[in-house]
Image 1 (cartoon, rainbow, N blue to C red):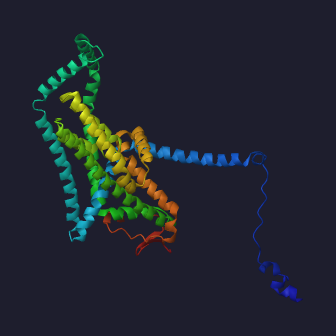
Image 2 (cartoon, one colour; image 1 turned 30 degrees about the vertical axis):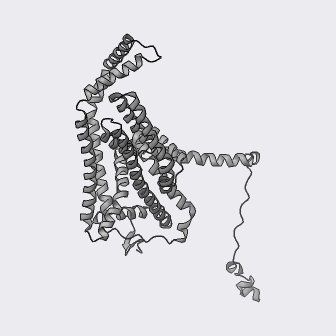
Image 3 (cartoon, rainbow, N blue to C red; image 1 turned 180 degrees about the vertical axis):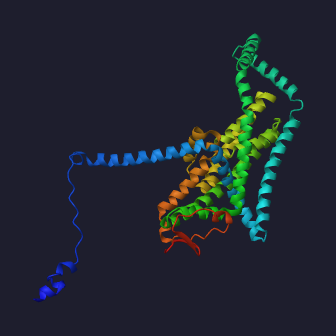
Length: 417
């Protein structure tokens, strides 16, 4: 036999078996008569369109599920927002050699004591301030009626009395609405108590085992995506903590400014007004305006129109300080969201979910903005995938794993069997 027949490398008898084959040729695309006749811009727009429709549909389904499960989602979001404030406190106490359980109990009981103190202060001031309000209300009504009668509107006293009678008849005609609302109070209180218990339960577990909960969430994702998820979650958590601390500062300044202005002007219920402004200021821009309007109405009813105008000036001054100083310098650096984005987020949240939507719109937008920016930056590509420790709490040991997987050390690896 010749060399070419015996040497496979030379292409002999079995040379074809040992020869390295190149990549298979790509089959030519068969024209279908459609793509060739469509402009490239139209094909690109169509490709973007169906992807955007799919993404919009997924977001719509997610929002629908959140709204349907709002009795569960809202307490959990409240717990997460409060835990962003309390986790640093617990960590501070633990670093100073407090036992973990005692640190959690101190932070939780301290928060409950502050909230209960604010509510008790407001209720007490309301009870004290209502003494003699009937006489002040009657005097304010007579003063307002005198102003209206002397105004260029040329109103007469019979016309004012007829207007008040029509208002009273309208209230009596719609009394069924108030009866229905009173009947639904029991259901609302039940939902409120259930949500409060769920929020406290969630907050307690986040303070006790927040790291374990986050590690469990990270383990849900594929190994290659864990660095991105872990880094994005850390950045979002930092932003949420900054938002919560800054929002408390802004709400305190609003409450002190409007409450002190009401007290100096002699408006009754100044302390409850301050507490209401503090709570309302957690809804950026909209909350402080609405609660400030309540202060103006109280001044108009129980004082006179001059005091009401002065109270309106105080509210507008505080709002200008917040809008031009506090929001750009403090809130803008904390949440990294443009003021227009804040307004649109609050409007969209209020439209979709009412007051809870307006309350959580800004923190959700801020956290999503930071997480998406972190993932787009690609920093996580230079970081190795995190080694997720096995859960230390017996609770997470009960979470079932996929068949064929076992725990080895700090990783969850596929079994060799």
